[in-house]
Image (cartoon, rainbow, N blue to C red):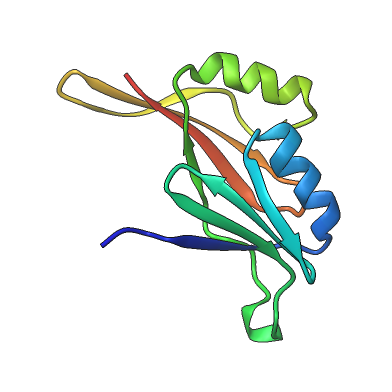
Amino acid sequence: MKLGQVAINVENVERAVTFYKDVINLSLLFEMDGLAFFQCGDTRLLLSRAEKEEFNHPSSVLYFQVEDLNSEVLRMKEAGATFIDEPHMVAKVEDTETWMAFFKDTEGNTLALMNER
């Protein structure tokens, strides 16, 4: 079984589309009826307003895996991303280090970049 789609609640779909396309660099698949769909590896990412109040909450933290964490943080900062910390090691298992940097999208959701070396 694999994960097919993840939904992220947003207040302003148009603003969020610009951020996810131009700052995070995800490929926009299509938009329709206030929904925006992006390709994120093998998983589709949906941006939309919450359909019901019970679903109106911040998203889970999504961790975008990148090859070069420091370069990607610099690129995203130049594109307008607000990082809430700098790249830092969060775990070391045997010879593999896991590094992360957390940032906010335009809708207040916390997201992260990660790299394993």
